[in-house]
Image (cartoon, rainbow, N blue to C red; front, side, top):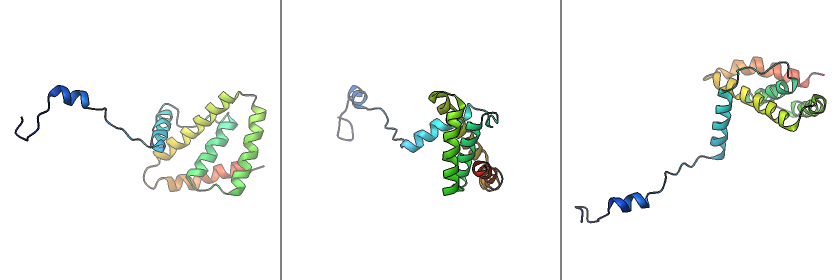
Length: 134
C-alpha cells in the first residue's frame, strides 16, 4: 500500500491510460486546414484566372460584411458563366476555389488588429464593384 491508501502498479497505470482527448471542433479543424493551405500558397491570387479572382473578391466581401442580395445574385450568375466558359474540370474548379479562399483568409489574418478596416474599405469594396459590374 502506498501512503495514500491505494496501491496501483506502474503496469496498471500504463495499460489503463488512454490517449489524450483532443476535442477540436469542426470549425477549428477546418480553420487549421485552411491556415495550413494558406501558408503554402502565395499571398495574392493569380489575376489571369477570373474564376479565382471572383471567389477571392467574394470571400473578401464576406469577411467585410459587404455581401448583400445584389452581390450574392451577381456572384451566382458570374460563377455559373465562368464555370461553363472555363472548360476546366470539376477538380480544377474546386482547386481554384480553395486557392482563392485560402488567399483571402491569409490576407485577413495578415491585417492585424483593426487593420482589416482599411482592407475592407479598399479591397473589399473594390471586390464588390467587380462582382456587381456588368
